Length: 508
Image (cartoon, rainbow, N blue to C red; front, side, top):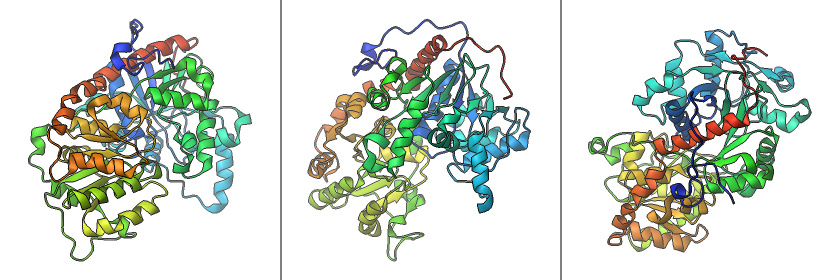
């Protein structure tokens, strides 16, 4: 497999990179889709926030405010007023929730939305910058980034992600919806979003994985796989794909082999520490944990059971992800029970993440541990407090069956926490010998590796040996390093696009 065109080509990273194209005299003008930036703290939301911040240093980015779910917004025009752009932000804050339309109006409204082909861009009104920051960026970026990010222009559209999906699944004969993005040289979408752009604007799709197709047993329904592949295949012929790892690029070509020529590897970046390590010393682990505890495993709306005591300074291992089938929580819970029974009865398991889908079995398996305090389920943990929890954990464990990249282990490494990972090619590509690995299908193997790091007396010298390899891994994924890969990709995008538009296209 050829991964030419990235500072991260090949398994060896920088050593295999090709020369970057010469920089142009002007920075690339790129419209950046922020539709998923409101979707939680980690994953795709975190990636696109960091991408936007990195582009502020190497390009001329503008933010695209686009709702995700179906909505009841009126048609937004290029000269829309402040209330109209505020309405788009409102729907972004609501994320995937759907419009509260009366039953009799929903079907005709959705039919009209699906038939419509042209969508304008309206400049965000002055005075809405604080809402943009709170809704889209504050969960990941540092306060020091606020002025840089909000100095960029933002444009709103009423074209919703859900309706792009609808159009490509149910209305393909109508053609792609057109987005009035003239004046830009590229439009970067945080996931595959097939839309028609004006001549001279290169579409770039961020691509993370093919999980809905390759791991169909871990998603909500078979339709997810059909939709994912359809969206990739419907992207225009000149679309570039920015894959976050070589393994993601391979997964892309499973869905559509035609994309090989314009597919490149641009990895995720790890955000700088939220706070200085010295500042963490004043925070109490128990207070942070207690502040974000969830007893959802005990039932809807459940509170702490009678006699339950807040955690003290007991040792713990940590897992950070949405609770959903691909993350393999049953194996982690079983391995944790074995380690606790055999080598460290004081050990606790801290799970940081909201509920996703098909989580009933995991919640049932967690019930006894949550009731006793052996398992601590946390939600809504901000980045500085998550940094603290990682820094004081015996190790972070990721038992996933599949990942396109995996940011939490990198953040743990940055916080000084050893990482224990599934034997996945993408984890080997990122971490090399700076992590311990196990077969995600072998509970005993996971328990054995966990005991080495989290036993009552951890294996001598192991943490130090892993820590010695940490700096080389983190250096590859610093924002300034990854920003160079984005800059190179945008230079290539200029060569892909046709004739440039001379002015911003503002109407359909």
